[in-house]
Amino acid sequence: MFYANDVTSVISEKCKCKLYADDLKLYSEITVASDCRALQVTVDKVKMWSDKWQLSMSLRKCAAMVIVLIALLITSIQLVAIVYL
Image: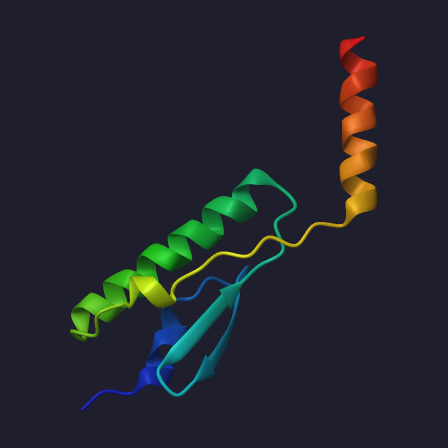
């Protein structure tokens, strides 16, 4: 017997998760490169946890979603353009 809620023990403090039945959603706000690494480390730990409990991850159900505020993108592009002109 195992408890699926136990998976939360391997999730980094920088990441948040939602559990429903046998589904897990991980999400994190990425503001610096280390946030990205923390999210990847968490995904790797979840994979190791699922292997340990012999629960295969369904790759067809896995996805990534990026949400970006457009105003920040435009500002960043303008700043890059100013720097390189």
